[in-house]
Picture: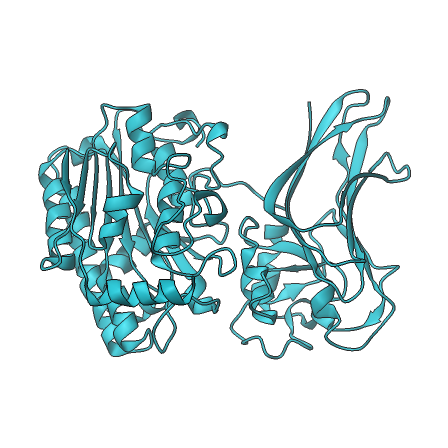
Length: 509
């Protein structure tokens, strides 16, 4: 094993140290693929890169990758879960779990849980030791700390070589070696962001330079003598964004912005998706290589090759159309920028919202259950832990009493989200699953109720204390003779907090 470990007191490391002090797959059979080809993975991380600025820059290679495959803009967490810094960001991308699991809260990595949640290259080595893995990074902590010694080769590029050396090493390994999985991190876009800001010409110039380096790596892959017999999944991503003025670590949308650009055998050319999250990078790499994702690993990521349709996500075109004032117009939330996706109170097909007990007045956008996006909801009020809603994807449902009470109201917040009628088998068990995030303040209450064949709803779960973002599983005993079940999510309270619901499913045993 070749390991170059260089601890570099560079300008960036000093900046990040100061910030740290300041802010103390499923089986391969499910993925279509030409059976004769050998699967391989290349992940390239562009530290501090913003997708919006990549589109503004002279970046022909990244543009070509977007045209050839998938582009997925995304957002990440903020404090109190973790600041928008490199340590938590790269750890999330590389391990496939969010900071509440890997426990990296800054760039010191103190208390990390990499033994429990190892990097994806280590998982490859454990599952298939004959596979060849390689990681090279301009920011040494990635290859010193996040990737384990199980990886065949870890290279922390010497400071004097920086991204030029990282690129040359990666190009050589991709073109002349025979790696199965490669991770590369380039650092200079982040430098330009710190020194000049994301709105600067220098930041665009850094993207242009990185684009050329990405182009060299992709060309090295395509020039391989065995390329025709290989099946490459190439993923480009970033650990966090930057403010226009420069810097990151806070909760603004530019700082929380990230993305995935990916080309592979099942990813449609020119496609755009909004259901992709940072942990999906690791899960997608494992799935592409045919490594089954063990549920015991407790990964948060899911392979991009295996999308999961969600009822609420079907509302996204209504959010983007902006043709119906009832759907997208900002009535009271005029502080949210016009370019940020809106909301709707109109549920997807089969769903209803019962506001018969709901008070009047209040902030119009949040009267009763609302279907919205992370960008819109967190922009309503930053730094009240809405940014910790990490496991909801794309469009989700939220009941937000706190925001509703920001204008005079009559009565209380009392709204019920009602599911379609799911088929069930009487006398057997059924399993209800959903993603939730619940922040509590008395007398607020969240209640999950189920009714069978139109009978009176019965309570199956009640929330009266904080619940972090997670997937819930509730086993239901279906009454004899029952054929359908509806699920109700009732949120009631005063000027309290909020409840998020997403990814609802009810399946029989």
